Image 1 (cartoon, rainbow, N blue to C red):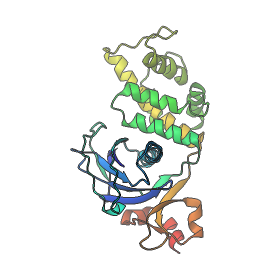
Image 2: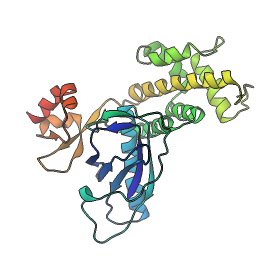
Image 3: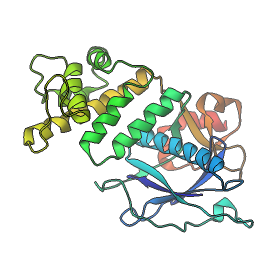
Image 4: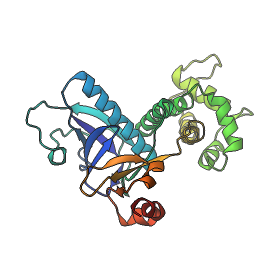
Length: 295
């Protein structure tokens, strides 16, 4: 199966092999101005059951990359082929070249796949999927709704969390505070403003509060842009502090030449695993952990 993989933050290597959630993948970077990247995997049989399972794992991986690198990432299934003579995954080449789907806002380089967040719960997975879609969207209205839905995962109270976060996590969401200063709160709490003047008017256009979104009014669009920037920071804070996404997994090899796989951070010291794709920047930033792994 071959899937298209848009990623605004370019990786240092053109090709990565890795195992994630029991599936082996090959990620091949393409020219971001012409085509999205390619994510390939080999399935035991080409049927709906295996296609859906592999796609779900690939989508979770995309969410993890989006979160770790703060990138705009999008993934969709492009197609596949069935054959009784399949080449090894490391030799497979892409055969589908479509057009990128994420907005072109320039690309930054020098990123890696060495470390990803360790997704342990269904709530974390659901929240990261919504966060990924919010980051990938080229529409502030849609992005706001996805980020707001992050705050609803796990039965959360978005209004209450926003107002609580401003008191408890103010330093962590300092970018949100800067955006909030530009909003016409008119004596309301930030949580109620984001709910009534943003979430409701986007989703319903005529909510019970009587607020109405004017798509052709410049000030309404400007306020929505600042609100989207703020709610994204609240979504990050919610995922970290309420859903508890604070652990990591690392791309390592069990032995020289072994297939790279993601392994939880807290289990690395008990095994002689090595970082799969070491680089100078990786050694400089996380030298302590690296020495712990290969001691």
